[in-house]
Length: 334
Ligand SMILES: [Zn+2]
Ligand SMILES: [Zn+2]
Image (cartoon, rainbow, N blue to C red; front, side, top):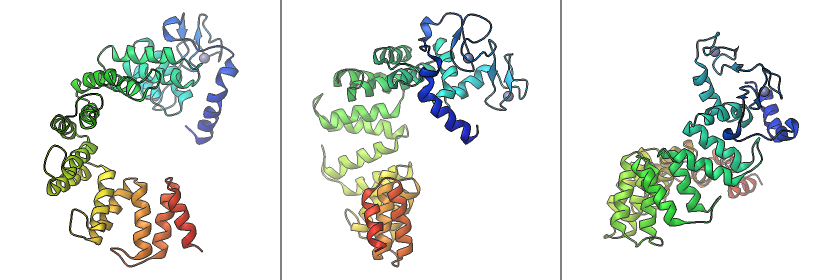
């Protein structure tokens, strides 16, 4: 889709309820058919809002419009195309597909539809209905929906905060093999406010998450070891876990290792190594590491001082949202 069209659709997204004048209807109260072009429901052969013919759909692969189950341009099946469309980051474009798939109880589409109602996109905001949709998506033990409900009760959005219920949902999600669910459960046992503190259980849960590929759980394991929680402090082990976290792609770990080597904390000071970790973290999008690189280049830590490079990193960090980097850049340019 062209950028202009995309911007236009975003603008329409805000105006959409006004334009149609019709309220988007929840899937269970749709009578007739869903227009795959605009998401309205119709009874006659033409969509009452956009006048598209019943059953017309746009192929997401080759942008041909179709009336049959299989795309005449590229052979893509309609439902496969709708599934792609339903994940479009442009919510207005995704809407007809989300609504259509949610009607057949597709759990991802139910989750997406719930977000529309939670945030009042395209439809009138309806938090009660949003919650019902999340619960419906979770009713088949669908892991991402269980996680979402865990977060909802954990953070007290849509519902009053209820840590016990959130733990129940995280446990159900963990049973479905969702790594972050184990991590959340681990934090409850580490904090010990909802359940009795138990560092050993926390450690076991972080370990499960880490071994299922949750990089940041290695960070939590490292912090238990470094903090001597439920054990003797063990910096060697902590360092090993930070490195595992970095290997698994945690930019937080890369940044923290950069700091440890720069400062000579827990390890023998090695600024060149620190700088290398900061570079990895910055490449992975870590704004704090970008700022730290600015400092390193400005003052020559682990490298020759280089004010051009320093300015470049401060600018990147500022663009990534670090206000202190904007100030540092301003000071450097004085
Ligand atoms: Zn339509
Ligand atoms: Zn096609």
